[in-house]
Structures are given as C-alpha cells and as structure tokens.
Length: 589
Image (cartoon, rainbow, N blue to C red):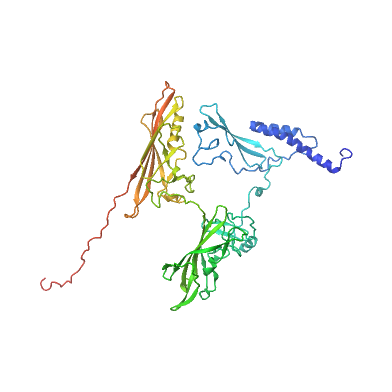
C-alpha cells in the first residue's frame, strides 16, 4: 500500500516509473564509456544493475536468444562519397582520398557512421584526422555503441518484422484474387518496370507529376499494351513522363473490323488531354503524320493530315480486306518544367489487313519532350567531327553502364599552359582533348625538398591525370552510354627509367588516340579504335642542400590515322565458257 490519500492509479504509475528512471540515469554513463573504450561497457552495465532497488524484477537473460544481424557493413559505408573515382572534400571515409588530400581537410564532414538506429547495440565507424603526423593521416575505429533510447530492439524474436514481405508472384491460380486486390496497373515495356497504380486515387495538385495518369475530358489517355499474354489490353493508362514503347497482338473478326474502335484513327485522335489535372483547359491532339501501308508493305505518306479515314471492308479477289486499320500509334507530348501539357502530337500508320494476317500486330509509343529544352550536345553523328571534344566516362562496376559528366568538355582533359607556368596556380583548370588536334602543354611544380618521394609521385600523378581520369572513350560521337561493349578502354601504361633503387616521379603523360575512317568511301565517318595513355617517370635525385625543388611536367595528345587505304573495286573481265560439239571439225579431224 502507498501513502494515504493517493489514488490507486497514481501508485501503479509511480511503481512503473522507478525502473525507467534508474535505467535512464545509467544510460548516458554506458554510452560515454562505450564511445571512449569498448572494453568498459559490461562493467558499467553491471554497475547500473546493482543500483536497482530491491524488489525490482531483473531483466531476463537473453544471451541465448538471437541478436539482430546488421544488414549494412558500416566499415565500408561512406555516405559522403558522391563522386566516382574522385576525392570528396572533408569526406574522411572516401577510399579515393590520400595523404595529400588529408592535408587540406579542415575536419571530417561525417565523423561517425552508425548501423540501424533501432538496435540497442550498434556498430559505429568513427573517423578522425591526425594533423600532427607528417603527412596527415586518417584515424579509423570500429566500436560497439549502445543506443541511449529505452525503445530499441534487443532480441530478434520476430525476424519478418525487420524486412519487407516477398510479393506474391501472379500465376494462373491466384491471378483473379490479385486482380481484385489491385485497383489497376501500368506497364512500361521499354524499361521493363511494372508498377501498381490506383486509378481512383484523386490528384488535387495543380500540375502533373511523375507517374500521374494523363487525364482527358471523360477519363484518361489510354495506351494499349500487353498484360499477361501478348494480347492488347485497352485500359492501360498513359502516365506522365513515363516513356513507353509496346507491341501487342489483337485478335479481330475481319467481318466486324468496321465496328472495332481500337482499329480506327478517331479512337486515338479524338481525346482531349487536360492541361493540368482537374483543369477546364483542354489540349487537343494534333495529327502530324499519316502513313498508308498496302498489302505488299508499300508506304505512302499523306500530305493532308486533317482527313479522317474510315475503315472500309472490301472484296479483293476471293478474300476480303479491311482498309485504314491502325497499325502504329506514336504520341509526342510537350510539357513545361512546371508539369503542364502544352502540345500533343500524333503519328499514325494505317494499313490494309486481310484474313491471311489475322491476328494483327499493333505498336504503341509515347514520349515526352520538355518545352524550350536544349538537346544533349554530341561530338558527331555518328563519326567524330574535328574540333569537338572526345566523349569519355567511367564504369564503376561490372554490368553497369558508362557514367559521364554533363559537361562534354570536361570528360577527357589535359594540363593547360599559362604564362606563369605554375602548376599549383592552374590546378583544376584543364583543357579538353579535341578530336583531330595534336596538343602539348606543361607547367612547373615547386615542392619542398623534405617532402617524401612517394608523396611527390602521388602529387605529380594527380596533376597529370586530373580529377577523374576516364576509363573508356566513346568510339563515335553519338555513342550511347548503355552500349558498353562498343566503348574503347583506355590502356594506361607506365614507363620508368632504368636506374634502380631511385625515386621514380611521373613527369609526362602522353595520350595516343588511333582512329580510322569507317563506312562508305564517299562519306567516311571517324571512329576511335584505340586509346593509350603512357605515364612516363624519371628518376628524382635526393638532394638535401636546397629547400625547394622544381619539377617540369608536361602532357601531350597525338591523333594517329590508322585507316587502311581504300581499294577501288572492278569487275573481273568476262571469260568465254563455250563448248563445241565433238564432231565440229569432222571430217577434217
């Protein structure tokens, strides 16, 4: 029984708050000890347990029960590493940073990287800088950290709660059940992405956002696509900024081709798209191109795009044909950066269908173009143009595409020569490598004489190669980054002096680009076939009599035409291959 006059409910809360307050008072001491030394955590924890009042139920022993397994290795996780193959400023966990980079760091931007914050016991990677060392060094510690919160996961007694459930794969048995659960679907065949979208979800925003259905005056813009089989499904909605290109099969009865709406051009040209969701302003669909395809695949483009051609069922010999059937539909939507649709274009391919080609194949495409947007600059189409920069990039891991910077003039660069000839003054200012231009540049680098040879070599090599020296060069000026097989790897070679046991410092970077003329003799296209970067090193004598040393470094680019000489082809002289009858010279022979 508690003190007289207190309600029973207050006594219950007071009794429950005693262990919590004792634990909360012990938690900061445990956390401080763990951060300073990982070995004192058990002793401090035992001390906090000894302070519990008599009668308090002790915590059950969970040493035999499973502990949460961390999903991420904090020792290799670096959240501030944003640039591939480059050192990010003040990012102490960046593996691309070296001793020379640490010398210009002010502090670690991310000093502690921890595991999941829901766990009571976490792994923590602690980074710091030792500026007293010469050169400055990075200090790394992997410690165990105790979560100060009283609400944390200590024992994994229900493992499915720590991860998402595996989705149920639809098949012929559960398809009907899944269709009842899901309100709709959207299929992007070009990127092979399937996403579930609720059709009835209201969109009250004043602009279109990514993935939002394109609304029309009566419903939404439909883009037929295959669902489970290859058959066309007409209720697939077109989503904003989701480019699609699909091909599906449509089974039709040729006798009823005039009654099927999905075969008429009015079905795709008559809807009016709302400028923004739930708007009264409507954007009509403008027919920009109509191409007629005959039975023998001959194409004819109509000059008048305002005409509306109906489907006609006619007799052709012993069979019937249906004319003006829609075979291809291509939408082109122009939008502003504020999510407003300003223009909709439509290109149609109409064909003649006979009973021999039933069922028919239909192709549907939709792509989005931002208004007043500038196209990505190319260095040629397809071959390189003299004077334009070489396209280059990285491949961070096997199976990924080539990563390129948006600035084409900064993908493959060399040193820039100035009147001062000071390498440190122009550090970071580079000159792009232009196709067909042989180039040479250089500068002087002054370093303290007491600087170790290894640091000098690293410093000079970083100046010669620059930040992010590429691994691949595009063979053509318009090569796509996903076509990794076609890209030309950069072969990096090192050449050092013959003196042994001497300090080798890079003094020159010589880049040789071999290209050939590809294609027709009338209009050849420049294609890069090989790129070699030769890093030349020289011996660096150890001199202790001077305070400073000056190193002359240079870079050079050479383009070599390795095209085979064109050989004109001539037809062979005709030969007479005639046989006379065996008695032609009778009776003389």
